[in-house]
Amino acid sequence: MHEYEKEAQERWGNTDAYRQSHNRTSGYSKEDFAAAKIDQEAATELFVYAFGNGLEITSEKAQAAVLAHREAITKWFYDCSPEMQKQLAVMYVQDKRFKEYYDGRVRGLAQYVHDAIWAQ
Image 1: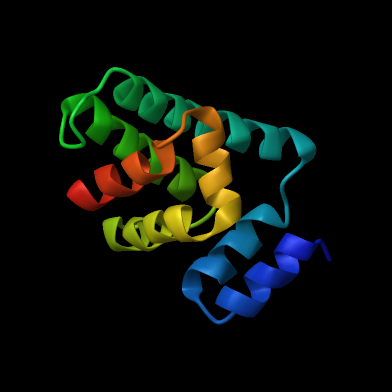
Image 2: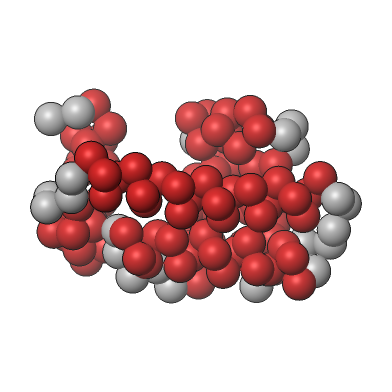
C-alpha cells in the first residue's frame, strides 16, 4: 500500500467518501488516473487564471474554478458536496503538501483557492 493510501485509509477509512473513492479507483487503469489528473489540473489552471488576473474570489471565473474543482472530484473519486469541498479547502492551506502544490504554481494560490471555495 502506498504511503498516501495508508494515510487516507487511517484518516478517512470509515467515511462514505473514502469507500466510494476506493470502489471507483480500484478499477482504474493508468489511463484513467491520467485522465483524472488532467481534469484536476484543468480546474487548478482556472484558479491560476483567476488569481493571476486579480479577480475577486466571488467573480464568475473564480467560482467557475470552484465548480470545476468540485466536478472533477465528483467525476473521478466521490460525490463532493460544497461542504466537503470546504473541508478540502482547509486542508489545502493547513497540510504542507497541498499548500506546496498550489503555491508551487503561484505563491498565494492555496489561500486563494481556499477563500474562493469558502465564498461559494
